[in-house]
Image 1: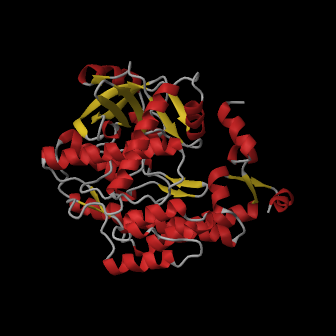
Image 2: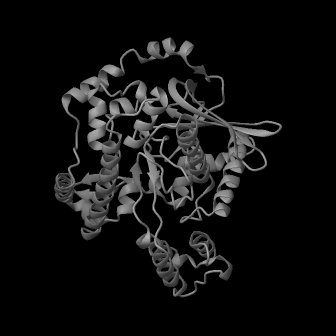
Image 3: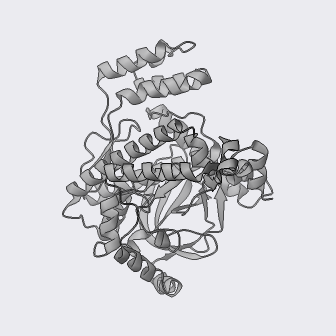
Length: 434
């Protein structure tokens, strides 16, 4: 067994337990519910023939095309590079490289160059605008881009040349500020695809490949995480493991770098992520609700800054109260939205300017920002695209919420279905598992 499968089997998690078994009758019941929800939220399940044909055509002769691109791009194929994703990830759209130098860290975040294949004059682009995001239901995914493209030429698989959009960040060793930011088209070659469990194991094993690189990037990511908290960024999940911390912090750093570059260096509009803040009364209501929980006490020195108050409380609160604390905060939080102006910034992150760039396979906002970075040209209908992305994200979240509720109604655990998938068996076998 691989180290990942071995660890998962020992822990009794998804790999060891196998798929959730259901009857054919229940499977039809779930399919009918999905179709009902897709109609309700206008989520197209399946791609028009012209979109699939176009995607198929763009995968032909791709290696020759990549070789032709090498002279026009930064050739980073000799740079140690790797991806880290969940074990069930279907595509790998981001990869990392890192170096420590005498007075700086150099962090490279490589993102699949989707706009090389999906451009505004294609049916795939129109389809992506219509969908606006990938919708993740437990055990079922509705993709924004055709998988035949997203899971092949746009996926940063190991040991194959791939086209990327690289964000190269030179970070001051003392304060981790940007000394310089460079965003450019590149050709990369990932050395390995790690799952989160494998990344954790690599951090613990000094003799493992990529140990030093993962150790270094975790040290940097952990410092960035602590710095964000000190600066007032809200952290609702304080117990995140090291591998998730690496990916979250590196992606946040890259997203912030790109949108700062667009705003301050280029002065162009983009799809910024804006998160309004709750009113003082709403924050007071949330903090009082948290303070009233059994076994929970908000440190007195933090009451003046609600985000720091929540962070400090989550770190000390009993595990049984974490969900209630998080829910008290989420109830008063306004919905984040996409706008062509970063006015107001991102309250939860406490960033003046923020936007998305690192997931162009699954989010329209990132796809649009890739195009703006590449062409330095803003779509004429940018405001309409911002509204579309905001509305469809809301629809996707509500669809997911209602489907999870339905799974619980029919006796299925949404988390188990999500982590393990579903297998349809005959009635007698299914009855044994429910």
